[in-house]
Image (cartoon, rainbow, N blue to C red; front, top):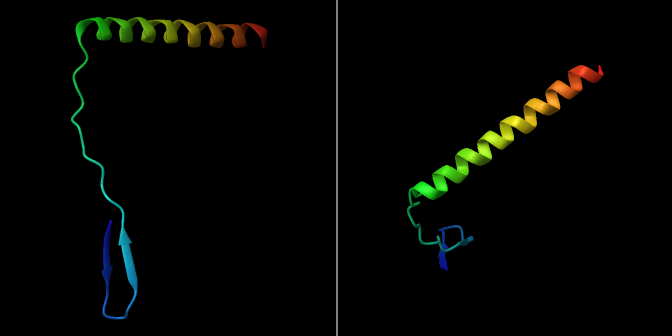
Length: 56
């Protein structure tokens, strides 16, 4: 932790910044899984909207 005192005598404590790691690009299997999850989400939302319109 870094501690500094300014000329007015105020204490300033700064938190340690965590080490940053770059994100890794998803492999082909992960991309396919994301596409499948996206398609399932679109189907779910579409069915919910159609059900809501049919009921009202």
